[in-house]
Amino acid sequence: MLGKTYLTKQASLLLEFARTTSDSDLSAKLISKAADLKSQADPLPDKDQGPKPPDVVDVSPGDLTGR
Image 1 (cartoon, rainbow, N blue to C red):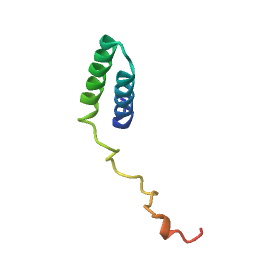
Image 2: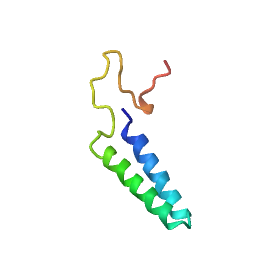
Image 3: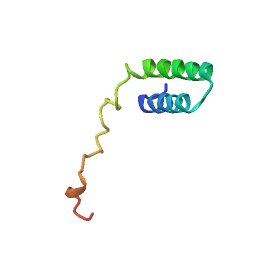
């Protein structure tokens, strides 16, 4: 399954191409495809919300002790 970040990036690229083309038919198709990708991405979570493995610890950069 493709992730939300990937689908959003692809939709954004399609919209960029749609803005730069002078072919109105191509532009309309690109915008339509971008809308399809966005509708696929919308229900997906922003990040993996699953549990972390027990050996993973959240450490912010200021907390590093030089280990």
